Image (cartoon, rainbow, N blue to C red):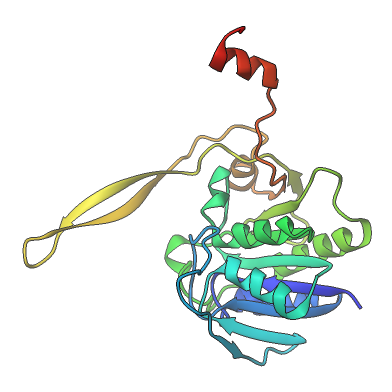
Amino acid sequence: MVKILLINDDGIYSNGLRAAVKALSELGEVYVVAPLFQRSASGRAMTLHRPIRAKRFHIPGAKVAYGIDGTPTDCVVFSIARFGNFDLAVSGINLGENLSTEITVSGTASAAIEASTHGIPSIAISLEVEWKRTLGEGEGIDFSVASRFLGRIARAVLEKGLPKGVDMLNVNVPGDATPETEIAITRLARKRYCPTVEERIDPKGNPYYWIVGKLVRDFEPGTDSYALKVERKVSVTPVNIDMTAKVDFEELRNVLFGNT
């Protein structure tokens, strides 16, 4: 029987997670392991300084479901330790898009990246929503179209595998997508946000700081951001977790050490 691991950095109560269960349960046995609470933007953080606690949940369509008080990466490590290897790992359906090289900050993408380091073909999938709605559980949001695209892509990966050199797929679905929306194969944009720090003053006169980000609005054609934000297409970006630069090593050696 096909074993599918499902993670979601929005937490075990996320409606996006439940929509993903519904799509994936038609393809195999779904093992759900997700943080007990919202863990967006946690990247590949791993909990090493304290024990991890897990709570069993019942989620219709899932063979097993656990909520753990850890990060999305912890969820992957916990799952493999408890249940063995998987045929596919899916992270999502996330509230809010995950675009550009900043997917390394994303808990959604990082869970898929962690799974892929264990040799598991992985998919991270996110649905574009208004920023103010990204920190809830997805109340009132229609995940049906994103769920259909997930089922379609997951089935293809299970049946055919990923091409050589591709470890995971990062998928972003427009908020206004329909089942007929076109899919674009893209590369990662350079940047989606330009972060900075905003200083504020508390009632006692002490400064405190928020990290805030200004959205980049000019995107290069062929990137995930251009496909989603300009062309209104579903972006599918193949990702290789080997981040070694494709450069002639001898050229770099000459830059660093000269011709000696």
